[in-house]
Each structure stands twice: as structure tokens, then as C-alpha cells.
Length: 349
Image (tube, rainbow, N blue to C red):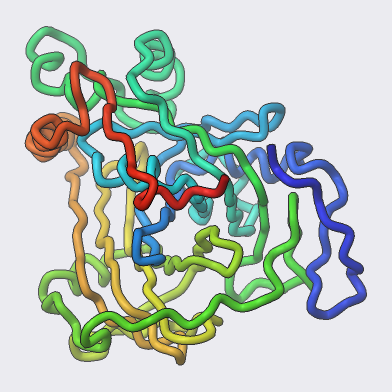
């Protein structure tokens, strides 16, 4: 269960104002965003105490009464699933109003932090409801027919639900908007202590991926977000911008991160009903100035605007990943079978 809201005095400049309602008693404008944004960003922790930031669609799976926000993922996303099983502390940033049903006049960036629990196996009844009732509202409908089922079954049917029990919700105006005296919070107050500077990896300031691998996708990205692990152990995600600085990325504006640390960077774009879409997903090193980002790895994808072509491309791209999860023993007989060891699991008790 989420912790109750704190009672820090709003008169203290170091203590943000805190809404005194229970964490699950969410205002209608926040629920509107959580249920209506077409795309959100997910940040999860890495074993080295960094963060990976990915674009996802929650498909409006929000339950204020249960204090949960959910999303789904196929077994082909086994790297993400493995990390979530090892450590469920996550953040979800609702930062994009375009093409969704949330009120576009609501210019708040909503950050949800909480603890994720992943289903071990697909729930056919839930998936049937999802593809019938929710999926067509956000994405192209699932294609039907024997050929399509054989081609895409590993993507649509081998899919599990991830349920995030919400610990905290914070709201922040977008850059350039009038800023209130404090963020609006639901749940415990944000940490008042800064995260410790992290030990540097080998040659942290040396880029390990060539600029040609990412600059075109970043130039096309309508949204750029940076994520790191805060002092309470939960990831945070902040909106930023970017400029190319040789093989480095310069963030604009600089991020208020004390000390050098591992951070994830995401650039992405999307159209109506998620097509076309694309992303550049980085892990790397953020310098003490909060501005200089050194990319160490980059991944991502581009999907065309044609729904059938996008479906075929997704199926072909995810099939080898699904098979690899099976070969590595992560998925057995249609069920997630990986169990993290005690040394790998760093989830809160």
C-alpha cells in the first residue's frame, strides 16, 4: 500500500506543498491525463543504479480506487521484464497530450512513482477484453485471421500485464508555463536530500556510440526526457531538450542533478493511433553540470504510418526476441519462469 501523505509545513521553502488526501483520492484532472494520454514514458532501474527510459502506452489502464496504473508488454521485451522482476521500483511520466483524449489545455507533466508487479503468464480473458475494448481506442485494431494469428501471436497473445501500485504522484508545469510555488504531490513528499554521486564506470566521458546512429532520430523527436534514480531509490523523469555537441549530447536546459551519475535518455515521436512512431533510447553518463550527456548505448525503432506494414514489421522484429527469451529459459511453456537470485533482487522489502 502507498504511504500516507506527509504533513510537512508548506511554509518551509525546502518542503513542497503536499495534498493531504489519501494517495488514491486523485483529482479528476490527474485521472484525465493518466487515462487519456496516448503515450507515456517508463523508467526502471538497472543493476548499476542507473535508469532506462522507454516510451509505452498504458492504454488508459488506470484504477484510482485500487491506486494502480497498468500497462502490458510481450515476452519479447524480456530485458525489461527481467529488470522489473529484479527491482519493481518504477516511474511513469505522462508528458504528451497530442493525439490522446486528455484535455489538451492541461499542461501539467504528471510523474507517477510506484512498485511494479508483473503477471507470470498471459491472462486470455483480460487480453480478449483489452483487444476488444481498449486497444482500438489507442492503437490500430489487432488484425484477425489465421495468417495474422500465426504471424503476430507471439506479440499479441504472449503478453502480460504489469500493475504499478502508486506510491506518489507529482505534477509539474511544462517549461515556459507559470510555475506555482511548489509541485502538487499525492503520497509522501519528494526526498529533501540529494542522491549521492555515483562511482564512475571506465572512461565515463567517452561516447561509445557514433553520433550517426542517433542524431537523425533525436532531430525528429518531439519529446526528449531524462531519467535517473533519486535518493529514495525511485526513478524520476524530467522533460528536457537537446543539442548535438560532437559525439556528446548537450541537454537544454540543464537538469538539477547533483554530481555525476548514470542516466537514461529518451527521444521519441508518434502520430495518431501511435503511427508513425519512433524512438532513440540511451543509457549513458550525465556530468555534474547536469548538461553534458555521454551516450554509452543506444537502441530504438521506427514504425511507418501504414498500420499493416507496422504490424508486420513489429512481428518480424519481436519474433527473434521472443525466441531468445525461450532459449535463455526466461519463458517456459508460455509462462515467465525467471527467478532473480537474492543478489540480483534489489526491490524494497
